Amino acid sequence: MNTALQWFKSSYSGSEGGECLEVAFTTPQSTDNAAVHIRDSKNPAGPTLQVTPATWTAFTTYATR
Image (cartoon, rainbow, N blue to C red; front, top):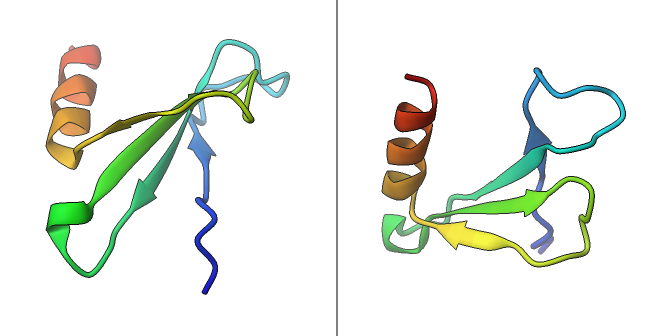
């Protein structure tokens, strides 16, 4: 079983990859374990932030106002 995350970044991001966030979604069988992982595109091996899908939705709703 492959547990590697598939990372995405915004289509608004430039090709140089600076100052962007990358996001990966986990969708396990149980929604209790679903998570959104966030990392800095300049440091893909660095730390990640994990939030619930509800928190991610609230953030993106606020950020797109």
